[in-house]
Image: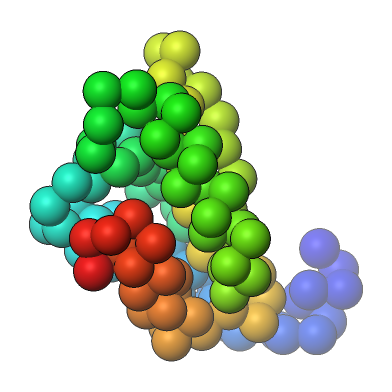
Length: 116
């Protein structure tokens, strides 16, 4: 924490966190408005989970989508299970993240899901 405050200043750190929260909320909203996507957990700070609703075997489909996203190399996402269902996690928390990075994440996710 000391290093972050030293490197960015207290106001810079506050602004970074506010931006990350806003960007995650914006991305969740965009995905929610995109056919075939479900937001499983609403953004908490800069983290939310979602899944793509394309097939009957949602767990296998979303694992495959996650693998394609990560193999693509433009963004990296992780997964977790909520109430037994596999979901994809998005976190806008990298120090160097920008609004453009989050916009690109939407393009990658929807392109590889076949929704974009």
